[in-house]
Each structure stands twice: as structure tokens, then as C-alpha cells.
Image 1 (cartoon, rainbow, N blue to C red):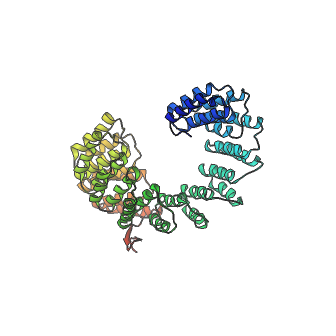
Image 2: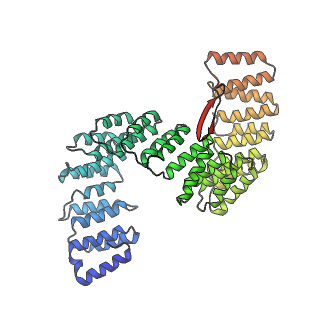
Image 3: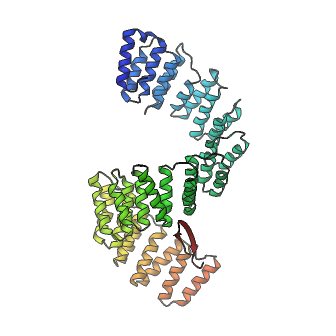
Length: 509
């Protein structure tokens, strides 16, 4: 079979010369070779060939329908199908799956369903499985279930399609009922259920099934690791990764990114270094999400020099990688370096996004770069077309507050489009206390308490303001109010890595 359009041209010329072009089967194979090259000019070339066939075979029709179904504009695939219906050649069981993939709108899928029944393929499991999948991915769970119930035969693909339909729409309980009824399961069946539980944060149920799996693949491990990462169970992420290394399953980029993120959260530099060594040893290119995760891990684990090394050695850096590096420099007190990096982004063909501005404004705040921070904040909408959000206003309130410009901070806060944002008032309150402006602190604390009546820190901060003002009775009454409303202060929590193991402890342990 030809591997590129040039070879297709050569084959075509040879077939014309030898007369093979008049063979319907040979012409169909030439068409199939043309569309298999995945070159855009090849599809137009195949259309030209197809238009010259006096009596295309079903294989030729299917090849063209499939090629157009995979193209950016799948509409011609449906047009070909309707032309086929009016030709001497009848659709076969391979035609309908290709046509269904071209259905951009649900009414088209219903029409194809009717054609399936009309042409006698209503009991073909191959065709029905594709139709079931089409309904499922389009959110028609009820239609998919009706079709599933009517299917005269079901195989593991049928069951998996229905389970995936339920899982995709958060109906993991219904998916579990089907799962428990299955007499035959494959690894994909288990993976759908594990992912379904994990996506809903039901990690214990996910782990229960994971432990029962007869065979696990990389998707199984990643689903479990991702579920733990999303729910903040970072020590379990690292434990699962260590367990995975004994399961003869090779980690992929998704694995590394999740585990590195967990290492960053718990400060496990040793495990993060092991992943870096593994990546280097196996010649894995550091780019994209992996580069970002490594930069973030090194930064959060206290090794900003190695974070810079990864950043500088990464040739293919995206915006998230730059954001991670700017954030790392900011958190290490290197605000001016972070600002220089931000200014380099346009010169490297990158446009900052909302996260970029949060990171660079935070850097300006921590470094006391008032003028630079104000300029960047004002440039967000004017130059970059990005409207500031809560996080950006929070950075500015912090920046102005650190500079002692409390009135300016309050004015900015009151002009902010988002009014019910406790974090902004909390930032202003901290600045007021730091600079001794207790009157403005009381205003901020009352506003904060009004917005978050069940947040213990709001009560405590207002109580502390009353204490500083000498209003002991007000402070006492506020703490009594906390008791009456059942508001309790959350204990502090921390983690430490000792000999490769992560230990978590709370204040008072």
C-alpha cells in the first residue's frame, strides 16, 4: 500500500498503463491508499478518482465516507451516504459506523438510526454498538439505555459503552449496577468505573475496585492517581506511584505530572528527583505539562536553582511553564527576576494569560514593586484585553496594603466588579492591622464577617481588632457568638518527608 501521495500517483499511473484501473476492486484499493495517507490534498485526489468510477463497490463508498468523516468538515460524508442510498450499491455493516461518526447533529443520528432499521442492520451488534456510542457521547443517556435494552445481543463493548455513558454524566450508581451484572469484563470496564468514582471524588470506592482488578494498565493507575491528586490525598499519590513501579506498568506523562504535583504539595523533593532521573535516563523530552510540573515541584520544594535549570533547558515552553517559573521566583523572593521573565514573554512569542498576571502581580507585591504592579494591572485590559478578576484585585489590595496605601486599597476594592469576595476584605484587614489603622480594620472585618458568617477566621480577626482597640466586651461577645453558632477554628496541618515516607501531623499532635 502507498504511504504518501506521491506513491499513490505512481500506483495510479501504473494501473492506467496496465488497465487495472478498470477493475472495481483495484480502483477501490487505490482510493483506500489515497485516503490512508492523511494528507489533505489526498482527499481531493481521492474525490476526483471516485467521481470517475462507473460502479463503485461498497468498499470504495466506505473508504470515501470514512475519509470525509475524519476530515475537519464531515458533512460530505453524509452527502456521500445519501448518494450511496440512491446507487446500485447497498450499505453494509461497515458503512453505518463511519456515517455515525460524521453526525454533527443529533437529528442526523436519528435519521441514520432509522436507515439502520430499514436496511436490515437493526440486529447487527457491530452497527448497534457504534449507534450506542453515538447516543452516549451526545448526552442522550435515555436513548442509549433504550437501545441497549432492545439489543438482541450484547458483548463487552456494548456494556462498556453504556457504563461509560452513565459515568460521563455522573451517574456512577447506575453504572455500578450494570457493572455488577456483567458476566464478562475487560480492563476498560474497570477503568470506566474507577475513573467515574475518581471524577466524583469518591476515591475510597475507586480504590476498592482498583484493588479487585485482575489486570491493571496505565489508564487504571492514572485514574487512581488522578483521583487521589484531585482530592488532596497527595501521600497516597506518591504511595500509588511507588506501588506502580512493582507492577510492570510504565508511567507516562500523565503519571509524572500528577505525581510531581503531589511531590510539590507535600515537599517530597526526593521522590521528585527520582522522577527527574527516570525521565532523563529514558530520554523523555521535557516539555509542556511535564516541564511545568518539574519547575513547580522544584520551586515548591525549595530548589529554585534547579527549577531555573529545567526552565532554561526546556526548548518547548508554553505559557503554563512560564507561569510556573514566574510563580516560583515570586515565592522565593525574587520578584525582580520574575518581572524580567514576564517582560520576556512577548519577545518569545507568548501572550500572558490571567494566571500570568496573578503570578507577576504577586511578585510585585512581595517585592514592593508598587509602580510596576500598578502599571501591569492597568495594562491587563488596556493592552492584553484581559479583564481583572478576584485574584488580580486581591494582589493589588495586597500590593497597596503593603505600601500603606490603605485608602487607595479600599477604593479599589469598592470599585471591583465582584462585591461578595471575602478574600479581598481579608487582605485589606491584614494590611490595616499591620499599619495600625484600626478604624478601617473594623470596617473591613465587619464586611468580612457579613460575607462569611461561618468562617472562624473572620470572627477571630474582628475579635483581635476589638482587642487592639481595647473593646474587650465586644471581643468577648464575638467569641461567645462563635460558640453559639457552632463556629470552630480549624487546626493547622503540615507534612514532612522522612526516609522516603510522607508523614502528616496537626497542631497539638
